[in-house]
Amino acid sequence: MKVSVIIVSYNFEKWIDRCLGSLRRSTYPVSVIVVDNGSKDKTTQIIEKNYPEVHLIKTGTNLGFGKANNIGIRCAMEQGADYFFLLNQDAWISEKTVKTLLTLFEEHPKYGILSPTHLNGKGDKLDFGFSTYSGMNGKEDFTNMQNNHEVVTLKFINAAFWMISLQTIKKVGGFSPLFYHYGEDIDYINRLHYHGLQLGYSPHVFGYHDRESREVTRADFLRSERVFHLSEYANINYTFSQAFGYGVLATVKKAMQALFKGKIANSFAFINMGFKLLCNTTQVRHIRTKNKKEALNYI
Image (cartoon, rainbow, N blue to C red; front, side, top):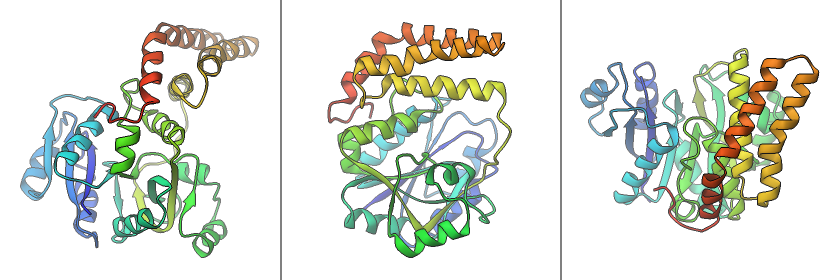
């Protein structure tokens, strides 16, 4: 079975050796595709000089996370890939990660996406996001998972380390063009569940994500709200009426709540959010219809 690792890069220089070096050490051989989104540093020169085995695609511009991954997936399919391992540029994996996930796919065909356990860049604790949505708060929880589970099902795992089967790609497609950067993984998992597939992780292999938990600014908060409401509007597990309520009307409710709390600027931001979603209704409806069909959408 051929595994293609797909990395979307933008100013990748800081992490190249840890990321690509970990793939060289994988106990299961992989091919590597890097889709570079117009890096301004020496990313492409370093890859061409030090990692000649990497298939480097230079887009010349920042296409966003989803569209660049779709390009990588299409290239991997043309090269005969059976599995696609989406790996963040600021991340790397343990040696047995790929082999273990492949084994789990063969033993548990109900899964469409599998991931390793996400640790921080130092490897001394769980990644802060993974800790939240996995419900694990410390060593005791993690030890229990290792002792009692081969694979653990979750509702959400972010796309820093996703292994996706070819069957999943053929059924669910690629990332939606509604999402440029952030929210692509939420939308994809919603579609995965609609098509009857599950999402899980192995507590026995690891991925290391070099990002820090940081204070959420107002801009970060509003961006996450925009992404959330767009993903709710696009969620094909809801009827369109439900999606309209959770996506568009919910922004009106939040605008009123912000107004009552005296947060005038946030109130206007939510009203603007809802208006933009409303203006996007035609495209959202079209994509919702498209995503319900089993097809190689967007690839």
